[in-house]
Amino acid sequence: MIDHLLLGEKAIEAKLMALPKYSHFHVGSALLTEDGTIVQGCNVESSSYGLTICAERNAIFKAISDGHRKFSAISIASDFDGYTSPCGACRQVILEQCGDVDVVMINNKKELKILKASELLPFAFTDDALPTLE
Picture 1 (cartoon, one colour):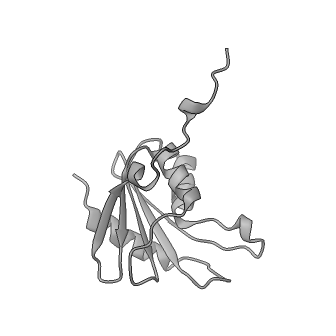
Picture 2 (picture 1 turned 90 degrees about the vertical axis):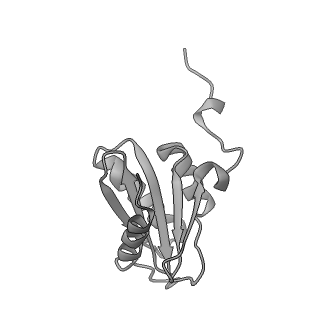
């Protein structure tokens, strides 16, 4: 069973490590692997804005580089009083790399909103749309 609140709290913890030098908007993420490991990520901004990395993709790529391939849930926390949902790029990466996992958004009152990745990105572009090489 997934402890969604614990995963949300780990995202809150991860946002403390964020480096948002330009937006000043701290975001943290925590990714739960199938074996129970929690991998944290935070947003890191660059003056060349396109090179900025979001917290969710930071956590996913970090987990993959550590050898994890199967995931159960991902959480997001920010400085915003409400719920922060993943941006479009993160939605694509979450669905493609993690599958239809629970996406846990936690606000500053530690209230949760949980959706499936497919609910955040209906009609997603997936590898099924790519031609197969033979």
